[in-house]
Length: 81
Image 1 (cartoon, helix red, strand yellow):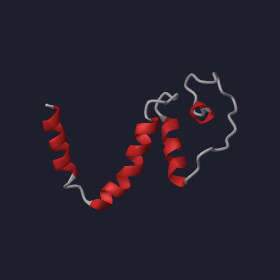
Image 2 (tube, rainbow, N blue to C red; image 1 turned 135 degrees about the vertical axis):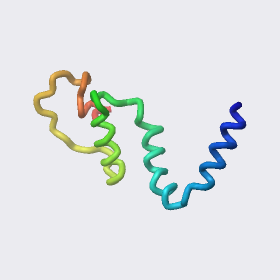
Image 3 (cartoon, rainbow, N blue to C red; image 1 turned 180 degrees about the vertical axis):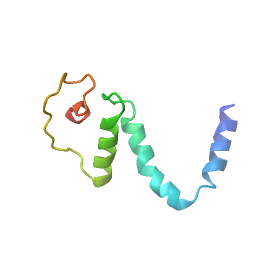
């Protein structure tokens, strides 16, 4: 079963235009590294992190005012790691 699914994935991927692959590679790489580390209710920290990653900002500077809890539903806890 795994071999068949791998062959199917390769068949589909080989038909994707190169400009789409160039666009998707950073997003897929980002997803592999950060997807499971969200502290927010709706993934807002992942959206910000993707924006910073796309701009080449590895350690953003921010000011967190009025936070209820340092990690629970925090939009900035991901950047403290």
